[in-house]
Amino acid sequence: MKALLLENIHPDATRILEGEGIEVETRKGALDEDELIAALDGVQLLGIRSKTRLTRRVLEAHPQLIAAGAFSIGTNQIDLEAAAEHSVVVFNAPYSNTRSVVELAIGEIIAMARHLGDHNRMMHDGVWNKTAKGSHEVRGRTLGIVGYGNVGSQLSVLAEALGMHVYFYDVVDRMAIGNAVRCRTLEELLETVETVSIHVDGRPENANLFDRETIAMMRPRSLLINLSRGHVVDHEALREAIESGHIAGAAVDVFPNEPKKMGDPFESVLRGLDNVILTPHIGGSTAEAQEGIGRFVAGKFRDYLSSGSTYMSVNLPEIQLAPVSDGVRLLHLHRNEPNVLARVNTLLGAAGANIDSQQLATSGNIGYAVTDCSNGVPSEVIDQLRDLDATMRLTVLGGADRR
Image (cartoon, rainbow, N blue to C red):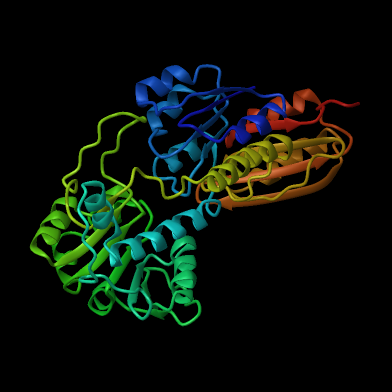
């Protein structure tokens, strides 16, 4: 078995996979669609970060692919529906870099409130400008969090610890943590707070969530932080708001079009503006976060290969499984149709297979049945199971015919 890991995934992922006897190829940069199709020959496991896209066309070209990992929080770079249709399980790392993103947000809130970027630039230019004008403590100020998931809720906790008053808005009914106040609408939040931090996902509905109209709703001289997705903020509109003075500062870590690899030129209409912090998509780029992500997703690969566990998969039914201890385990991905499990069990029963345990989970159009048989399963029955009309993929762990 072979794995391809792209975009500088932490070497711990390689060590974990090689420890399972898997051949691992690593590459530093991202690949476009045609490059990825060429690179995936003979590959069963794919690991990417944010810039490589796993599309339906790539999946159709490589039916041997069995698992893909987004070594990041987001999965919008992967066609999850197409991956499910091709029986490719997808894992991500929803928690491993949460703290790193939150700490960057806190640091940027303080940096913008104190104009640290501008003061640093002037000092390097030989200008001594010791002044308190325009500089503020963050204690007592209001922070609005748009998107109150894993990152947004943890930011809420740390911001309160700094003495900030926290408000949040989310389309999902989230429980407020600490003294945070839920706003019923985005407009209500923007009219209330002085600093806005965006932490939404990459779904198409969030494109240009902050456009000219939304930015105009913000209080004059507000601060804006976007560590979520590049397409969420209209950068032309943001530049106009900063140049007009309506927005006092911004911190942007994600961009609609980002360079594919280190050293490529970077262009943005936000370059050169005062009190604007631009960072190269490093929200989760700490040593601790990248190590955690590498270990987490590689561990999910290992668990799926050794036991069939799909726990925390983002596109297939979830079943949490212990390693196979004895006998045979059948992993049956199938279309979610009536009587599939009955047909599976009829074939197993006719062959005299002793079913020790069986689990079934469904999600949308996909079903996942896991069957443990202590006395083995004849190879001809394996073939019959694969030939069922509803079968998408059948994987056998352990020796099939033990009689």
